[in-house]
Amino acid sequence: MIKRLIWLILVVLLFTAPNFTHAQEEQISLLDNTVEIYFPSALVFKVEAASQSDITKIRLQYQVDKMNYAEVTSEAWPDFTPSPEVATEWVCDMRKVGLPAGAKVEYWWTIETKAGDKLVTYSDVIQFDDLRHSWQELTEGQLDLFWYQGSQSFAEELMAASKQALERLAEDTGAYLEKPISLYIYASTEDLQSAMIFPREWTGGVAFTEYGIIAIGVPPNELDWGKRALAHELGHMVTHQITFSPYGAFLPMWLDEGLAMHAEGEPDPYLQSWLKKTISQQKLISVRSLSSPFSAKPEEAYTSYAESQSLVEFLIQNYGKDKMLRLLSLLKEGNSCDDALTEVYGFDQDGLDKLWREYITGQTHSQPVLEYASLRKVNTETTLWEEALSKLVKANMLLGYID
Image (cartoon, rainbow, N blue to C red; front, side, top):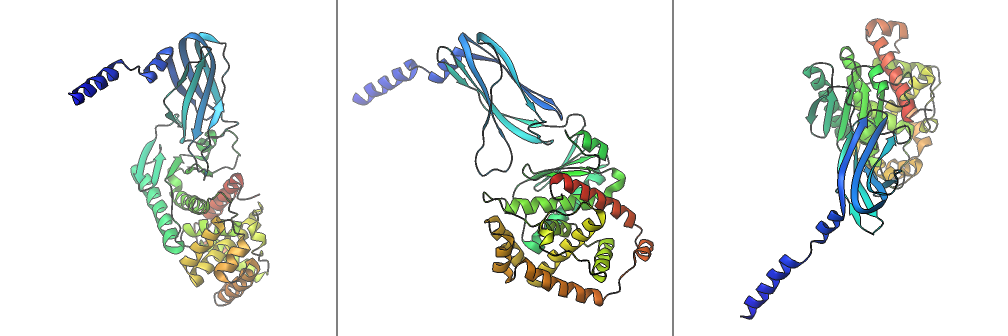
């Protein structure tokens, strides 16, 4: 009998107790909650609400999907006149925010009235897509490739080259992608630049490491360049993901660029010849100098890239992938490059410079140096590589890799 009485009381309470969430939502009615994309200039967040009391406070809260060690919530306060029914908007100006194509933003509104009622809307996600093109998509593993010009085989070859680059890095250095990457393949440099707010006339590709997004201009007739360029930028992505930390890991430029060049595969004959010529002229740049941003002068930039690749190859071939991975781990923990090198290899950057010079000089003496003129006859792709490297140098200047 007592059990039946308790059950009846619970049933009565269940049907008579107020639904606080429902009652609160009834006080403030959400009439509109939309976002308009004006790529690449802006996102426009719109909201409209009504209440029996004047709506006095409206704020937009949003979180950008990117690599962070702390949850960052931004707030925006749109202008409006207090009233029982309000429609307002807030413009996210990309001249200030600078979101890349494909970036995701989670957002919600908080609305309050003079009477003290409060409504927090459910969160939603908007993707800042470049809607000017009809994108096709190819997904494999952690890679999402988007393109709008070129055949299916064009995209598949770019994807295959990207996967090979990731496999090469994992096998030789132990470094791998920790988060998915989106690859946006624009059909030309002009199309790519039109997707940016402040492009420079030589921009050929951009890697947004914090967002996991690469945007690059690859015409279908420049597939070979596209493969190497994608592999290179993926090398940067892997390196930055695996060393990302709250300590603000400092990656020496020779290591960052050397790993990216390693991701491309076999060293290009032109760069190898350039390195040998630099050695013969005794104009090598010191390892410590290569820790800083590279020169924008083509000759010095070629030497810097060639040396960086050679330095990384020297460490991998002579000391193995485990030590390279340990070096990256120590840099992630906030150690300086000299301290990390000393702990892992037993020498700092000056010691590396000495050992590497002895190694590379011995290799050069055992192999004939190809003159540039004869190399052009042997390698019919030299001019294409010069153009590709020039684009890469200039693109890296935009990314902050080069001064």
